[in-house]
Image (tube, rainbow, N blue to C red):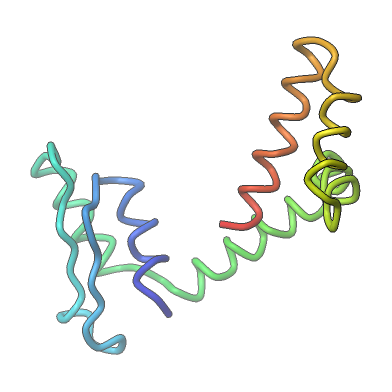
Length: 119
């Protein structure tokens, strides 16, 4: 369990500056600092997440998200083509495969899928 997963969950309902988990088994030690501009309803929603957050459920959602990315053909194609390659080889791949706006969009989507898998 880590505060990062909790912060991600809170950030879906409220801007967050930081999140703290004192004692993992004691939710009364968990807190967050709302981000600039957070409204009281957003802060209340963030506090509700602290009161009800389900780590097991969050882990399952994250596992399903990564499994979906791992099965995506564009993600797999990108990883196959660039993993373990030198900078020059990656640049050559881009030069050879980005020839118009549609191919640039496809490559950008592949890069974002790769980034999404690593965060």
